[in-house]
Length: 115
Image (cartoon, rainbow, N blue to C red; front, side, top):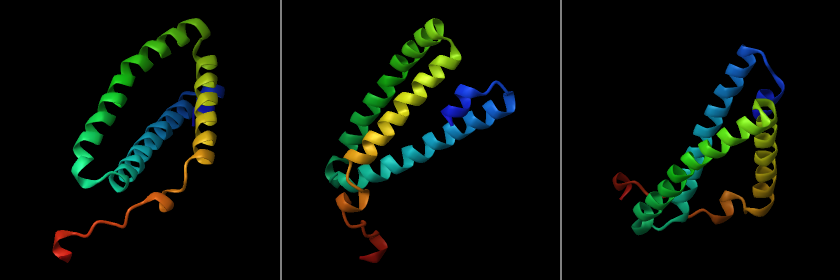
């Protein structure tokens, strides 16, 4: 989706691309939360979720500062290309380095009603 942001100037294309970025963020958040819940022992979930929130919420203002600087220095199109490139590199790296979720997942938790 960021590729479309980088190459387009059309407002409808940009709106759809940014909607796709938002949807992708929501989906990845859900997937990462589920992976975290499967990988972390029940007793530590609160601490891990809190630590993750500190990191992600703390990164938001830092990202805003970096984005503002990049937009000022490089302009919107170049900044979009830079972000697209970084995200593509990270996606390929993660896909190659991380094991599939099925290999690391705990068995699903049983509901209280199943006991």
